[in-house]
Every structure is written in structure tokens, then in C-alpha cells.
Length: 298
Image (tube, rainbow, N blue to C red; front, side, top):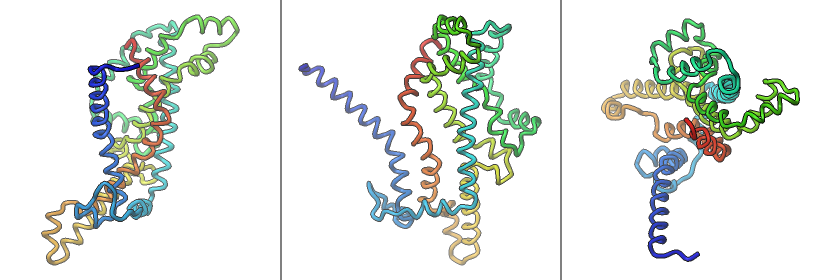
């Protein structure tokens, strides 16, 4: 089909806007990648270009030498997987009960959960509650508080409301129980919203650091974010102390408040971002579809 001049102009502007928007979104990640692959001396002189003069993986090798980083990676990954699976299971079961069952007080329970999303009391009540529940220095701290997510509940409940009741009634006539219907019929046909919630939940579990920072002192339970944060704080403290003990380096220490190479910091950012960057494209098509379907009624 031949386009007229007005349509060609409109299409050209569309591509131009989307191209600019894409570059703005991608550039920070590309810059982090390039700096993480650059030599520290080259980066410190501001010589980072579109592609490093000398490509090196030494920064990643330095990160992998950090004490406990392998264990921290495992804990973060285990937390993200187990936390996401349990969040999906419990939130979906709750949404199914509120949507398909005539449970007494279901409207009150739903409204209470939704209101809790708007009345976030803040860090101090959360800290006191977790400590009173005995979750300090416990792996359960990573799992229990996130079993029911209000935002996830709204998305899933909205999706479940669009599923025809005839499907459930047919399964009941065939002798299936409610739990069987939930697992073998409702969940399989809810793949888009399940994938969308899985992405949100996995990102939240992986990036969460407040519970680590305030309530986990056991190094064997620390996630990757806290281990890397401690590494940065300790290395900068040591570097500044060394600089203060050498003549002529005091001014350097004062001028450079952070003496850890910039390439190491960008490499740390890349290391904690890579798992999420790898997972998202895999679930992208379900993620977008789930958000659209979950937002139809809202």
C-alpha cells in the first residue's frame, strides 16, 4: 500500500521518537557494560569511549574474588525463585478464593488487603514487627512478608474475574475438586498474569536489600546486594585509612571521597543486574499481555 506524504511524515516521526526513546533507555546499561570492561586507569582518565581501548575482564575477576560472593549469589537466587513461587501460589489461591468462592467476609478481606497497600506505615513499624516475629537473622525473613502482595492480588483477582464460570462448573460436574480446578484449569489458562506477577515478584526479591541491611547480621544469610555493599564500604574505608597514613596523600583522600575504582562499582552494578536482564526477555511477551489483561477492569 502506497503511503501519502502525511502518512510518511507521521511514520518517520514515530520511528524518530521511538529511536530516541530506545537510545535513552539502553544507553545507561551500555555505559555500565563498557566501563565494566575497561581498564581502571583508562576509565579514571575519562577515556571511556563507545568501545574500550583495551577490553578486559579483570574487573569481573576481581568481583568474583570477594569473600562469600558465591554463597551470596546462591542465597539471592534461591530467595528469588522460592519467594516468587510461594508468592504466586499463595496470592493466586487467595485471589481464587475471593473471586470464585462465596466465602464469608471475602469483600472485607479484599478491601483490607488493598487498603494496606495505600497505608504503608514505613520502615520502623516493619522493623519492629519483623523483630517481634523472631525473623531476625532468619531466612524466613526473605519469604514470609511477601507471601501475599496487595498489588499482585489486585492483578490476579481482576484476571480471574474474566474467566467464565462455565469452565469451573463443567469441571465440578466431571467430579473435580476446587483445588484440582485451581491447579489444573485456572492456573494454566492464567499464564499471562502469572508471568507478569512472576517478573514483578522476582525483581522485587532479587533487588530487595532493606531486610538484609537492618535485620541480617549473619554473613551466611546475606544476599549479593549486601555482600557487595559491605565490600565497597570496607574497601573505601581501608583505602582512606592508608591514604591518611602516607605523606602527601591526605589531600588526595579528601578530594576523592571514594577511592574504589569506578570500574569496580559499575561491574558490581552489572553483576547484580545480569540475572534480571536475562530473565525479562524470556517472559516479556507474557508480561506485557498479563499487564494489559489485568488492567482491563481494575
